[in-house]
Image (cartoon, rainbow, N blue to C red; front, side, top):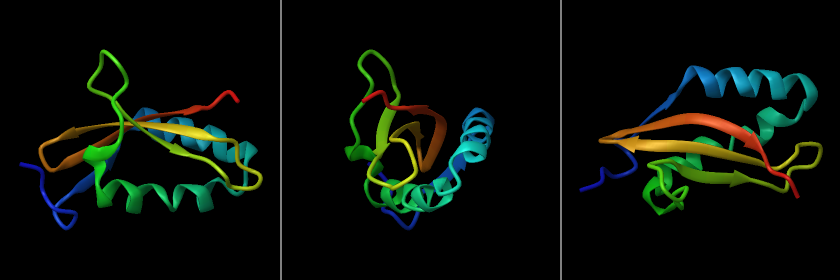
Length: 91
């Protein structure tokens, strides 16, 4: 049974933080786009699609002026949402 949104704990892993810090240097509005990440994950993380053949799930951040589209990869472990990494989306 999945916890409700009040019980999720989001953990940003070091690789994700490192990648975002590098992206932030190029895209000043990245923080505004990332402000949507936690609320989206807290609402219903189990609804995001899996990367085929893995335990990774993905969430896309698109539509922010001045910020390229990103895919955020995460896993769920009990009541923890582990944000693993970020990747630019090739359009």
